[in-house]
Image 1 (cartoon, rainbow, N blue to C red):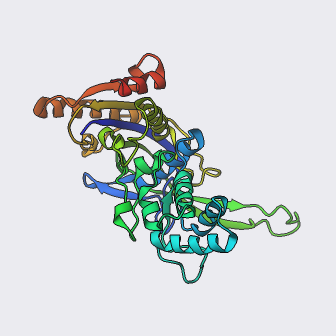
Image 2: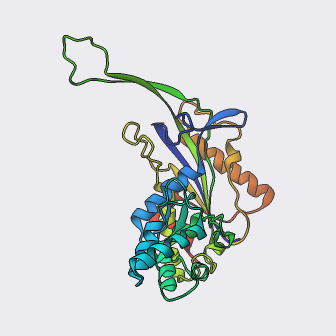
Image 3: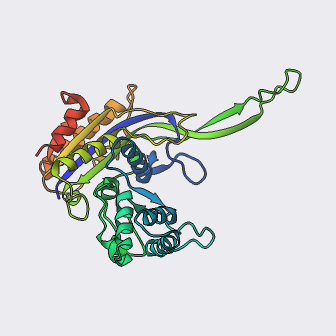
Length: 340
C-alpha cells in the first residue's frame, strides 16, 4: 500500500468542538486518564466542507432528498414531467427505502455527485435500464466520495471504500471538562425593575493540545473505482486540496461563542512506498506534562522520540518531512509529499 500520512499536533483554546448527546465535549480514556476527543466523523465533515468550498472537484452531496435532483435531471434529459417524476421515484428506492412520513425523502442519506446523477438520468432517458445506468455512472467530479467513501445498504456493489483514513483526535495530556456559567441581559428591562438577567445557563468546554492522524491510500485513490479516470496531475491537484483542507479545517460548533480557529503547531508528513497505516498516538500513552511551558513543544518532543524508537526496532517508516522545517511553507511541504 502506497501511503501519505499526516501526524498533526494542534492546540485549541476554550471550545466545544464536538459534542456528545448531552452537549458536553467528547472525551475518552487513554493511558488511564481522561482525554479531550474530537471524533473522526467530525473532523472528516469539516475537511470535506472546506474542500468543497475551495475546489471544484469535491462536488459530492450526501442527502436523503434524492427525489427532486433526479426529477430535475430526468426532465433536463428530455422526459416529460410525469415520466420524470415516475422514474425518479423508481430510482430513489434503488438507493434507499422511501420515507413513509416524508415521501420526498428516502430513509438513509445517500452520497452522490451531480455528474453521477446527470449520467444516470441521461442513460435512463435514452432507454437504458435504471440498475445498469446506476452501475455504469462515474464520479470523477466527486473526489470527496473517493476519499471519504460511501455505503449504500440497498446495493453493496455501489459501496466505495474511502481512500482516506482519519483517527479520533485525542489530547496529548489529561484534560477535564469545565463549566461556563453565562447570562443574557434583557435589553428592554427597565432600570427600575429587578436587576436579574433575562436568561442564565451553563455550557461545558475544554482546551487541549491534540494529536490527530490522517492517511491517504494512494493506490486505492488511483484505482478505476475511485479517481483512476483522472490524469496523475489531476489526482495530485485533488490531493493538494484535500491535504490543505485536512490540515486547516476546524469544526464549527459554537464558532460564534467559542471560536477556536487555530492552525497546527507542527505536521509530520510521511510518504511510504509500501506499508500500512501507523499512528504515533502511543507517544502520548503516558500523558505529556507541560513542565510550565505548555503542551505543544513537549508533545512534539515525545512524538519525535516515539518515532525514533519505532524506527530503531521496526525499521525506517518512510520519507519524512516536517512542515515547519520545510523551506517554502505549506505548498512546498505538500509538493514534497506528492513528488514521484
